[in-house]
Image (tube, rainbow, N blue to C red; front, side, top):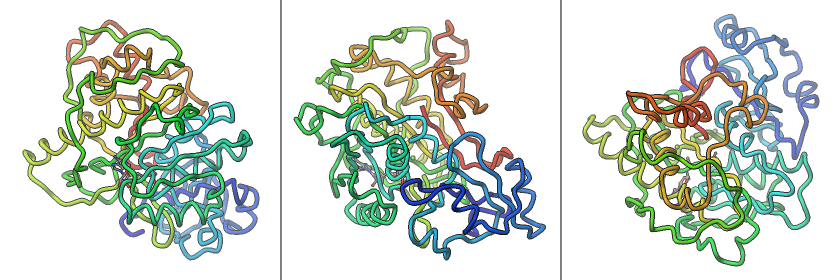
Length: 382
Ligand code: SAM
């Protein structure tokens, strides 16, 4: 908690599987003064006042005064509220899972913030009969935390956990994946956007990290909408590069990585290797035959892990053949469409600019900047 710093709001996602915003306002948050902006919430820190505001971008999300500890509350212990940074709530909300989407894959799940968020959104809409969330987690130890969080959040009946399973080893053509319509990808990253971390992060490179070739994904989506293709020139060729949140007492960092200072050279080499792994996760997801929407996110501030991966994916054969494109800002869910911080234009277009296509890609990317007064961690999602 101390790591969040004196001005960082406490973000509370109300778990709609177990509670409602109104119920939490009447119980856990009783006595808190309701203010209009997150800036007022942040400013309340030094005054010791207990204030809250309802978030204007993500439903069922509340910002509370910095420094207030909710980890001992009954609501937190019972899974009625989840302490999850606002930016970390963007991916599941942007993916916009619906009953008609079939099964939903969360490829890199532990500790389970986004898995349980997907379940909460689908619970409000009503799960289709037999519809499941398939949650993969390669690390067996973290998979136990995932299992605990999913049970506490009350989403265990709709979530199938694959403990110790490497998403990259799944066969998209397998019968169990034929109904997978949407995938949430939140792979391990440098964690450089996490509040309380320094800017020279270290990470554990996944052992399966390789430089994926465009031909490595032979299965092509055959139920995807055909869309405008990425131009093959007039954009830079960024090296593909290398993702947070928290859970039960005490809140757990969801970057999947640890943070140790490192030299710039080491950092560069590691970011390059991590980006390669992240790109392989993204390309693998695009090969699921019934998949029609995918979110890719990191809690990294580095363009190589973010826009760089997106540009490389769009230029890949698997994306071209499958007709994949980015969901434009105008098409995004309300709240994220209005979110002002967008992708890095130079990382998408190169210094010379593009023909408009890559500028649109940058505009479709959603960024969150740590310390910019909006009370969020550093984050990226597209
Ligand atoms: N989405 C999680 C959340 O919001 O709580 C955070 C995920 S964390 C950034 C990345 C996770 O992916 C780590 O727990 C890591 O062990 C797992 N992971 C890394 N490579 C994987 C792979 N190939 N297959 C499945 N899980 C993987």
